[in-house]
Image (cartoon, rainbow, N blue to C red; front, side, top):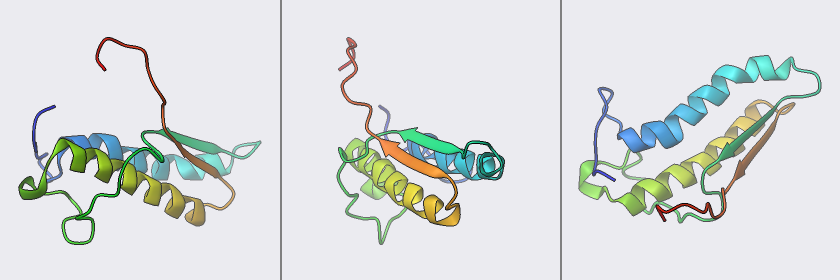
Length: 110
């Protein structure tokens, strides 16, 4: 729940974990999944259809400290993940890509 926390690359830790790592993982596995029988599938569970659009996506893609909030980080990660799943599905048309929302999880946290 901390604020903007940059990695050594200058990315926010939450965006690195919630978005960039998912895309890197899917891109790295795509060639292996393409050779799978039956065809490979990628399912990413984040916030599909539940998040808003990060308003600053054109001017501040990385969500800098100046524009940082938990809402912007959550909306940015979900929005970017939607776009990545769409883009990856076009790059790898033999694979199935899905982005889903987890739904309610019964814990004491929320």
